[in-house]
Image 1 (spheres, one colour):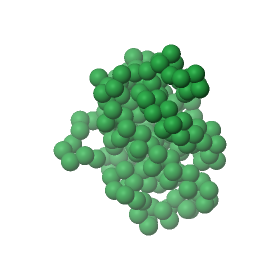
Image 2 (spheres, rainbow, N blue to C red):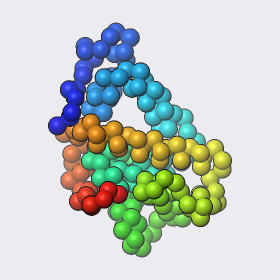
Image 3 (cartoon, rainbow, N blue to C red):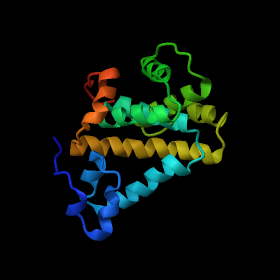
Length: 188
């Protein structure tokens, strides 16, 4: 159960009601800070619609963050969203296997993206070796957008966890299809 109440459009000032044009639970909680929600939305919109980063790779990076953080909300939402951007069930199974150190048939770019997301989520930064691997197929703009994406979604999962944002019923089937592992002691 969320730590704050979910707000509706009618709870907001007229100038802020546009913040709930997509009234998902995350937004309904975040609008307790309209300015924060607006800033959050601008970067999120850029990542989804403005970045030149390949959308499949973007979604794999986000899914990796959600998997590592054991974030039911992030994971379920981006399994669904990933399907819209050419992430397949085979990709999701491969992400789980790659995270566990098992062999996969993922292409090299996907493996480097997942590794970068793991290194940035578990630590503070991608290693020199990983960054060099990313630069083998990403130009400066795209590698910057990837790092921004991973960093942004690490912030998102921490907000979701701290505020205890609930997964909406329509996203629960994705958690049933691909359940998250049990949390390990000590975090990621």
